[in-house]
Image: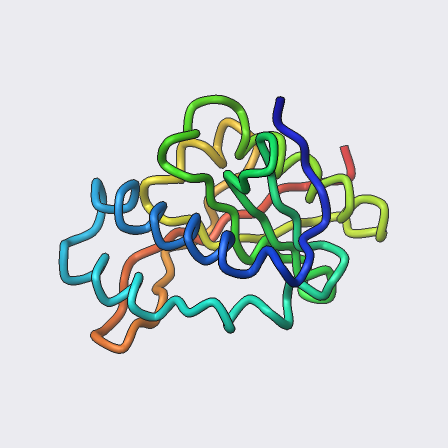
Length: 156
């Protein structure tokens, strides 16, 4: 059974592993090997420590294994990250994390939620009710990778 809970400091390494695996295995369908390599090399466990301390950084667990995570920046009204381990995709875990983040956003009074979708995740977000806004870029040391800015009206 999958459970969603607030992340704790000791989850840092597991979150890093899920993020790295998702980029290296899932994003390769829409990004070049050089882009994937540069992107995954940016990720370090310590990058998550400050965000994990906030109340809207969530992890999905199956038993005691973290299989996904999501992070909402309430001040910006943005889903900053949502990733699921490649072994667990297609089981509704990402959807469950996203719905929980949207619930937090609604409870804090947000009416509109933004995100920057990787190209491989666009259809996932469209199914969840997000609308395309414009093409955007994500900065990597080796250059820029294409993403899509999307938004969802939470007031309905």
